Image (cartoon, rainbow, N blue to C red; front, side):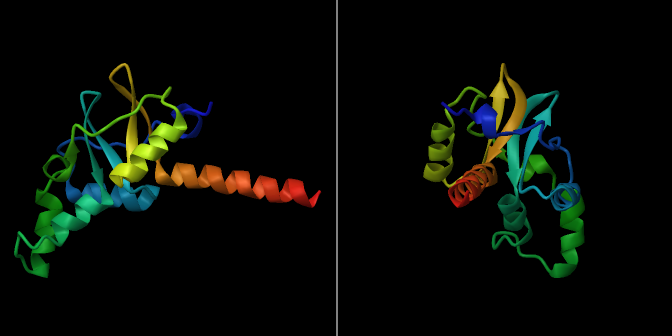
Amino acid sequence: MMTVNDLMTVIPYTVTPGTSLRQVIELMKTEGCRQLPVLEGGKLMGIVTDRDVRLVMNSPMVLHGHWQNEELLDTVSADSCMTANPMTVSPETPAYRAAKMLSLYKFGALPVVDDELLVGIITVTDFLDHFAARQSKTVIDNLQ
């Protein structure tokens, strides 16, 4: 049976609770990721997503001018916009269960934790990459 360990991204990029929104955005852009686990002292505290970032920058609850965006980027930190204590899976979790969780809760990713340590992240993209690879292999096999 395929497990999360077979598909997950090992040792994902992470941030700390005090990481500024500007740094979060820069890391997401440069590394091409949409979710960043938030670690403090090696312990998973939360996860910040591109959606969390958009909500802070475009919040109808915080009326601000575009000129104030620069200040928000430097004063808002990961811990103020992250999802605290996110749902997690273990490396041994069956892959289909993780996929079901992602679908059911409309998450883009789940941190993978083993003995309270972050060991990876499983994303919708990991599942899509796996599916695409299997499909293209099937097509190639059928052509031969």
